[in-house]
Image (cartoon, rainbow, N blue to C red; front, side, top):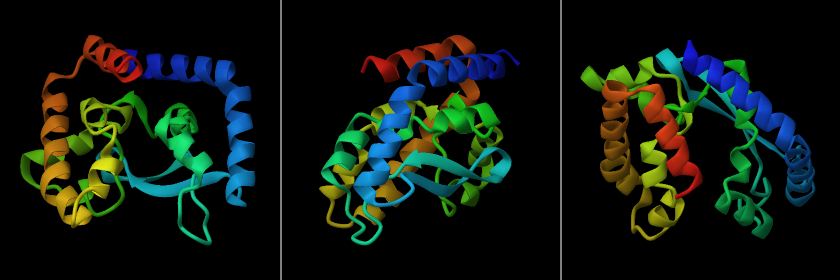
Length: 181
C-alpha cells in the first residue's frame, strides 16, 4: 500500500514538474521520426498479464534506424518518461523488474516465476547494471544468443533476489542509485 501511494505521488509530482519538458520532447520525437512520437509495445506485466508500455519513439519507422536525436534521448533515458503514465495507471511501479517483451518472463518456470508476482518497474538493480545493454549487445557476434544465455539469466537471478529482499527502503536506495549512478 505504501509503495503504491509513493508511486502515485511521485509520478504525479514528476508529471506536473516535467510535463512541459516531456511535451517538448514528444513533439520533437514526432517531428524527428515523422510519426506520433510515441512508441507503444506489448510487455509482460504482473501475473504475466500483457500491458502496453509507453515510450518516446527514437527511430524512423521506414528505416528502422535510431536517429541522432533518438540516440540523445535514449542515452539520457528521456524516452522512458512516458512510463510515468504506466505507473499512474498501475501497470508499473518505480522499482521492480523491467518489463520485457513476450517470450521471456512469461516463459519462466519453477521458482523464477515468482518474478511475475512483482509489478514491473521503471528501474531495478538489473537495469542499473545493464544501463548500457544496447552497446554491450552491439559488441557481440550473436547479440540475441548473448542476451538469451548471459544477460537475461543474470537479470532473472537479480530480479529473484529482489523478490526475496524487497523493501521500501531498498526501493529508495535503488532509485537513488538510478539517479546518481
